[in-house]
Image 1 (cartoon, rainbow, N blue to C red):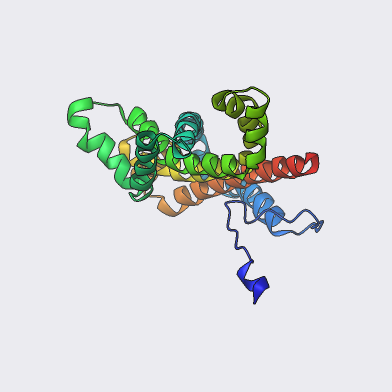
Image 2 (cartoon, rainbow, N blue to C red; image 1 turned 120 degrees about the vertical axis):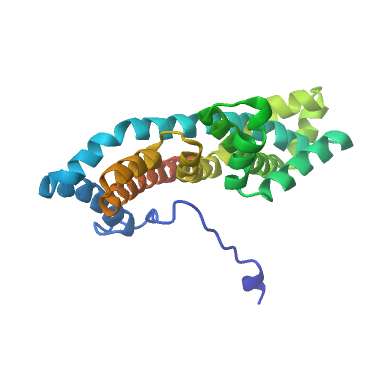
Length: 260
């Protein structure tokens, strides 16, 4: 019974990544990744119209998807770090504000936040679609990043903070020079998983007239009525991107564990 109580269930965005010891040629990740790439190559060759035409229509949407994802993850990291520090702050007001931000944002679906910033606040702010999309995704994922940073900071033994203070460092200096450098190594894998989740959630920005990958697929489908073909190619491109970055996150995590 004690073993059951201490058991942990972990579900990540890299579920298809094989374990370190798995050397099988036909692993789930390899079948999914290379199978998707094969379909992206074979379908346009077998049926150029419409599959090849769809592929020519998607590249600028892929670039827009990466633009939204990269900018959102950068801003959410900054916001998350500030929030994480606020969550462990001894100043009650700062701690309470950071905690309320995390609880409120995590309790509202991302789609609702997108609508709220673009449409509800749009009458006053007049934000372009892509700016509203990046703002909403940064605010949403900033709350999750804040919890990652908080957990990372609190995982560092308290004795290190006490030792740094005993050596003459202030609490802020100890946090900056001793605690945060160690925290960054610990939070990199979960941040990588959040990047993958954000990449997939970026498809929601298409509702704000942002010409991302999904939007471009919808535009092609609405003009040619090739809905099955269009969404098949969009799904395959998303699958290749998410599996590719999942593998990078797994490699990064393995190297970090190897270094200790």
